[in-house]
Length: 265
Image 1 (cartoon, rainbow, N blue to C red):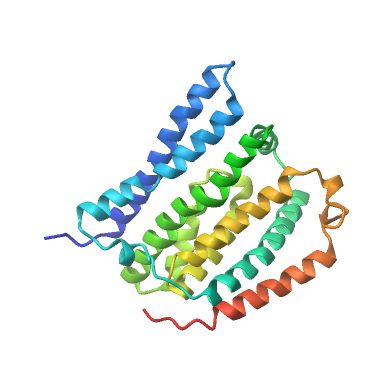
Image 2: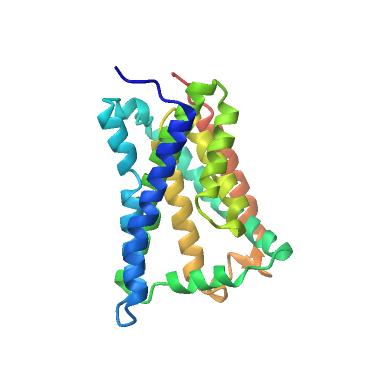
């Protein structure tokens, strides 16, 4: 007979899943850094691919070994095209607002050197590297993180605590912490809250997965090119008002559409 899952055990599964991602990804990254003659940029993408892909293995093993339903445990419920469309609208608007938030934060806390170094390391220098980065950031990472955090952990906490707000806030905090990036902690935490709300409101992991992929894709799109080529988007180092205002409207439309969804469970 299966023992009921406790909060401590649920966090333990999440921690083990994240640790698996770091260990396996770190092994490949270690090989890249130890061999100066290797294509370090490409192997870095491979390490992210392996790490993010392996993140769900402990979670899947737990669900399989306990004969728990993957659909119920991970909130793999289908949603209407209407919800997906409004999720896309919300994600596009939110990505612009999040970008401007980061620019405002940089006025108070200048971008640290390690962030610049990371950006330089991850900048693709060929078409294959760019393709790998796109796949990892927009597909592999969102799938692993959404299954683990919004699909498994948040749903469990919602059911266990009977308090959606607490479940979303705690899950988002843990989501921000595992990224190990204090400089981006505020943006990641807010992103986690929005993802958590979308997953709860639609009772499905698919909208938050789409949302996460678009956010990462937009960040990549904005980040790969020099700001001198983003003259329509950037004005005096910030998101131009003629871009920011429509983005706010898109957020409004997206939330309005998603909030029409009836919660069935």
